[in-house]
Amino acid sequence: MKKKILIIVSNANAIGSNNRRTGTFLPEVAHPYAVFTEAGYEIDFASLSGDTPYLDALNLADDPENLKFLTGEGWAAMQKAVKLETIDVKPYDVIFIPGGLAPMVDMADAPLLKNVIAETFERGAVVGAVCHGPVSLLNVKLSDGSYLVQGKKVASFTTEEEDSYARADVPFDLQTALTEQGAKFHAAAPWSANSIADGNLVTGQNPASAKGVGEKIVAILEN
Image (cartoon, rainbow, N blue to C red; front, side, top):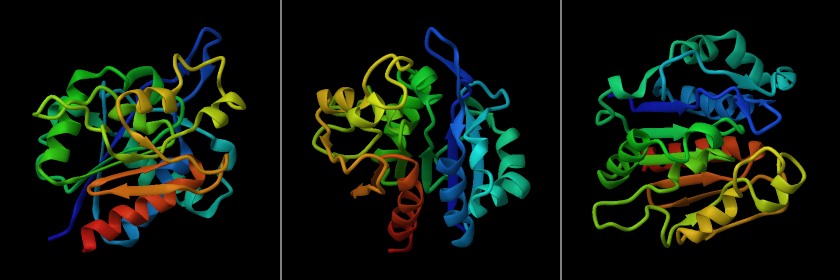
């Protein structure tokens, strides 16, 4: 039976007092999508509101995997992302949350998303996220009352990276917030590939880390 992947994307298209345009960062969805497709997995999309999601970084469309996503089945499927509350997530082997600044708008405090992540993690399925996507892991509490990230090795967009990217636009610092909830934060040099698996939790630092997150998820599923 094919493994099933659910990619959960943000519906936000602007962030901060200056209404900086945003969305899901193209390579952070396209590169893992390519890895999952190559592995022969079934891939579905969901969003929090069920409205058509937005893409950021379309200027990177000349990258082969990004272009294939845009012109192939990936973007067409993402545009039809269904509302998360209408999905039974239990059959999925993986839920994956790509980044972009958009998740910082609607995924830090989304009760249904938090419940879905906790239930998925506790039944032993894989939870993956990259760049700003790990904001979805904040405030997720397990059945014992502990934070999901407590004691876990985690990567996300770093304080140093944010300082040179979108400090004026984000509502809080993601690295700091994850650390405050007990994550064992692993930061590499800015903009370098850095993905990490801790059990069935897989996270990555930035766009360059997205493919590695996908590959680590596949490695877990195939083992």
